[in-house]
Image 1 (cartoon, helix red, strand yellow):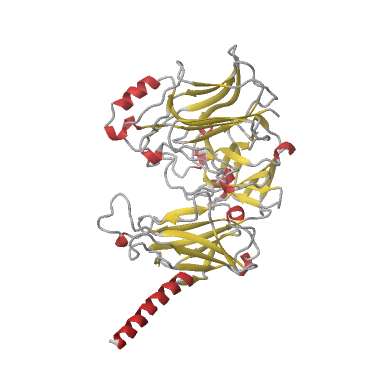
Image 2 (cartoon, rainbow, N blue to C red):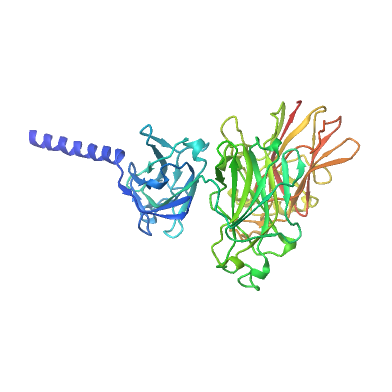
Length: 524
């Protein structure tokens, strides 16, 4: 009996020790890597199925010596949960989910610092096939982790639910570093610009055909002095690849071995390092084959999340295509940059129509806005205002849809299908933000991007309309995406709002759903 007790205690101690070892030691240490380019490295776990991480375990990556004196820009992980670990009764939601966090070791303090943004430190490993793992970008290392050069990195799994099923498969870890000056074959610097409103600069390169940018070449855009201390909110890149360079002139969507990709970077005036823009799916922007009259206006959203507060003084576009140089050229038509307002607001007018919509809050360390409707709800925009001249017709069509696709439309538009918002007199307009989307689900079909609903052609214009009917354009004919934020400032010239002034949000070419707006005014 005593022997059985002792053996039981030894077994229990062994289990506890194993658990503690799993929590404190890495399951594996990865040292092999490949260079993506001079500023980026890719750690590969060595298997197309991914390396398994049990709950409480981690995988450690050793940073090569030549990168240990450089500051990371951001990181990316590719991961998933394999179907073999899925419970039979898990249908809509998997209760046994792996949750991954990434920690960076500071060799100066011997501390591990976990990456964390406004949504928390963890990323859920969702069910996915081996060749299409989930990808997450861990943005803004300097602000979300710290101003140090890590020598080791750990990816840790905190499983929830059944610990035998909450197993993650980690495929890769990528680290992108801040860079100094790029060695380009040809660099052109642009200084001339047009000021569209109080926060927006536009650099026109060639509005008709676009200016050719070949691989390894770059365009730099220098900011005027009054904008060099203002952070970037959004960027709109108007670009394309000319049909004469198409891989298949009969099919512009055919695979192109000589594709053009545009890397977008901002230079900090604080340390003169370049910060790359990125989102969840891409880093460089793909230049689609399009004719000159139909160049793509591509929005780089959430620049505060990617760049952070760096007080930029320049912006750079580099063609990083790897095909034949003569066939991989992009045509750059325009670059439009929206900056943070020069002054803080004394009055904020905000209205949310669609639940869970929220605008960014820099003071609260929440730079990323939240979009309540659109693709995340299969094309539904609950409570949103329906804007556009044919909104009544669209509303009737929506009411006839099957119950699972119907949603309530908000009230408050004017007879012409637009929205007018009264402005207090004696203020300067600093910032206008509109959470808006254009998806038509009455077609009951998927669009080319795989989302439910037809991608529309709506364009939004934002103006100040006086009591006498005169108008001051602030932003004109901006394409409305499936769901996002349209941003503009006040008039380019100094202007105080007058009695009876209204902000006009006008929709043309289609209908759009307004989920909310925010207006910031000051008395400076």
